[in-house]
Image 1 (cartoon, each protein chain N blue to C red):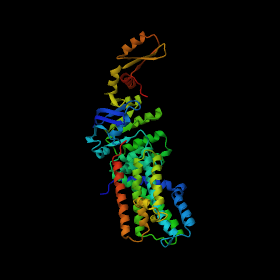
Image 2: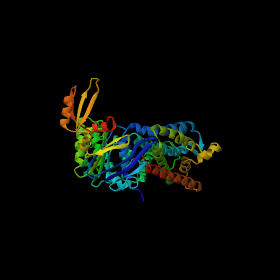
Image 3: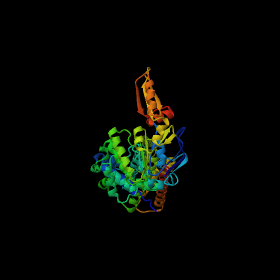
Image 4: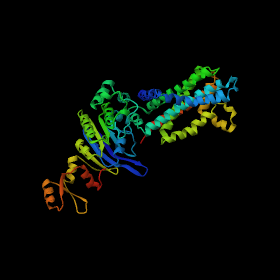
Length: 277
Length: 248
C-alpha cells in the first residue's frame, strides 16, 4: 500500500531524513517512533505531499507522491502535529470547507457522522477558538476522516494532551481501523505506539534503525528488565530473555531491584544509547 | 477550462470576512486612510485647485478608488496568506487537497478582489456625497475589477515568498506605498521628473489611474488596458507556479 525507497530530505547541511526505506501493508497501523528531531514529521510531510523529497521515491496505492500527487491526495487524510483549524470558524464550517475541497458526496450527512464519531456534534456551531486542546485534536481527526481516506496519517496526535484525553484519542484511532483503513502514526509516546501499532519503525537522526512488530522489537532486547539504583545513585538496567533469568539476576543483586516488562523505549535506548523525550 | 475547487477557498475567506465586517474596527480601518487623503488633499489643500477642467475632488476620487482597491486587495491577500502559511498552517490543507494550484490561486484572488471592491465601494459612497463631477462608466468598473484582480494576484506572490510576517510590511513599504503616491493618484504623472516618470509609467497603478479617469477607450486607454492585462496574467501565472512548487 505504501512503499518508501531511499527517501531523503536535507535542509542545508542538515540531513532531516536519510535513505529511508520501508513498506506498509494496507489495513495495518504503522508507527514511526523516535525523539524530537528524528525526522518523523519530515517523513510524514513528504508522504502527504507537503514536502518534496530531495532523493528517493514514495508511493501510496501505486501512485507516486511527487509525480501523481493529485491521485495521492484523494487517498489520504492528515492530522497534522500543529493545529491548523480555522479558529474563527465554527466546527461545522471547518468541516464543510474541507469536504468541499475533497468533493465529499452527501456532505452534510458525512459532516454529521464525523462530528458524532468524535463527540462534537453538539458543539458544531461553536467557534473553534472556544474549544479545549483535546476538542481541537478530536476535530482534526474528524476533519481527516471526512473524505473516507484509505490512508490516515496522524502526526503526534496526542502531543500536549493529558493521559485521559490521550486514551480517548487512542479509542478514536482504533475505531478508524474498523473499515480496513491504513493508519500511519508518529509518536514519541511509547505506550501509544505499543497499544496501537502492528509494526513500528524506530527513527533516530533521520535514519530507520529498527522495524518490526512491538513484540519482536522488545524480544530483541529481552522481555524483562531488572533495574536497581546503585551506591552512586545511578540507575542500572539489565535486560533478560525470561522471567526466571530476571528472577535469578535480582537474587544476586546487592540493592533493591525492580523487575518489569521491557518497552519500546528500552529498545530505543539499546539501539541508540539515548532516551526518547 | 476554469480549475475546479476554488469555491471552498473563496467561501472560507468570505466566512472570515463576514465575521470581520461585524467588527466596528474593520470598517473604520478600511476607510481611514483614503478618508484622511480625501480630507487633507481634496477638501483641504485641493479646495481651490482645478485639474483637467474639473474640481480637484472629482479628479482625486477615482484615484483614491484605485488606490483603495489596490491596498485592500493586495494587503489582505498577502497578509492572510502569509499568516495562514507560516503561523496558522491552514494554507497546508489547500496544498494537501486534490485540487490544482490554479484553483487555490483563483479562490485567493477572488476573495482579495471582494475585499478590494468593498473598500472601493466605501470610497465611492463618500465620493458621491462630496464630489461634484463623478461618473461611473463601464470602463471605470472594468478598471477597478482588473486592478483588484492584479493586486490580489500580486498579494498571493508576496504571501508565498515572504519568510515572516514582518517581510510583508517591508514589501508594502517598498512597492505599494510609493506606487500609491507616484502613480497618478493625487496628481498627473507628467508633473514628476522625467527620469522617474519612465519608471512610474511601468507601474500597474499608473495605468489604472490613467484608465479609470477616461470616459471611453481611446488609443492610450487600449495601451493602459493591455498593460494591466499583461500584469494580471503574469502575476496570476507566477502566483499559481509558486503554489504548485510549494514545499516545506
